[in-house]
Length: 595
Image 1 (tube, rainbow, N blue to C red):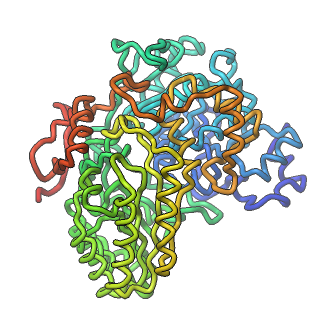
Image 2 (tube, rainbow, N blue to C red):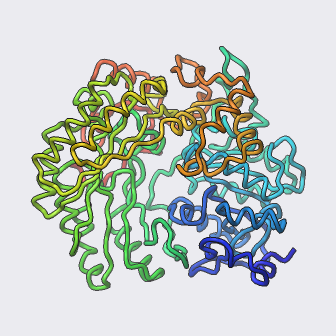
Image 3 (cartoon, helix red, strand yellow):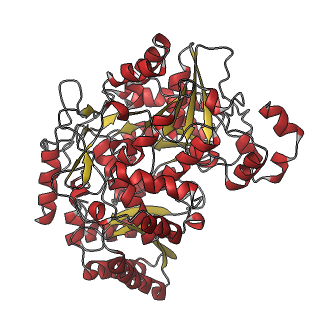
């Protein structure tokens, strides 16, 4: 089938939402003629989300840097387009050349969040690639996973041929060399397994121990880390979408990693240590990316942008140019201090839409347990500063279900928000509540996931906020329950994933309107699935112990014990080393200016 000819000669694209998702042709897309190696770069969600993901753009440019490689983009179509493609037997294809995914040498899939796992199986099915790795033949592409969720790849391991764990910049060259040098599927997998940061499940089988599938401690996969962001060229020719997407703007990664040490935060542990890009490099990238894209907005991305040590200096350098070109600069405003408000006010022009802060917990006890490092006075001061600088709307982010949390702690969220509304005189306060999920390679990986009945009681308390005319949005605890299973599971969980896709046709489970817990309950019951062995807390044996992210298990255990004793740990950027284990002679914290 000539896919492009069929799409443009029929009414398929006339009868789906946002047909621009499916045709490519954007400014800065890369199309190559005949190349030695064809790679499909896949984000397992719709185009609007995948094209807003900076890591996806980085990988696209990293692979396409090589003359021998043609890397093309693949996304999961929305439900209406899936129905059309299945009706007309159109295989999943790349946007650049409309090539069926099955015809590529490598299919690289981003593992960004656990609830996207059903989408991955749908992608394989639509591509006519056998779902299980063991069933693939010589002509099938090698399916490679990477991204933050690869820190526990076990729930999806049976569906992947390989995973890379760590920073993509350091591994892409080696992957390309293996594929160019070796031709057989088997030899490529063997050679990939020899690379640092690569896990090939078929060559590293788990064993059953205490009811869990775990790996031999002698077969450790060491995460690969980029030592210096300045050593790799950031993509300045970012693709400019033809349709509105989640983040239609230029994005520059200002630094990678975060050492603040929030004990619940997977990204903060997985991406350690903090590595700042130099001010000179940032300035050059910003000018070049704007020249090459024509965007009128640019965002400085990181886990904690306001912690960038020379942020004021950088903004002073680039602001005259941005003003001259009528380009707006956006910053994430989640740090609870006056600096974040004053800086946001400096950058804002005209109407001030709103600020976002993440206290995470309502009581000081809980903020100390999670190592948040802020107190109530700071929260009130920052809201007061926001009001004084002309802001009238704020969003506050909290979690419930944290270790050692009581209903009294949840009542403190209500009390804090109510008092902020009363004393600040802000027009609008919105409280967003997420449910805490223990994540691998964090101090709270040993914690249990709170039972649903208890969570529902806490949610009832939070709905009191409405009587104070405070908007409240609360994450579905059942959705979090499912996410927790895939965050903490072993390879036995993969059967649940297979059944939910091919028996219940459940995909896009991260979308509230598509999530139906009854479907999951049916699959759990059918498989006599015992979630408690994953959700009731772990002791010393963990399904992901064979993955070494650089942060030592001893450090995580120590932080877990400190949380029980309500002890805090300082940010090692500005105090003594916390002995987390990630730094070595080739890798260390990089900050441009000491505080």
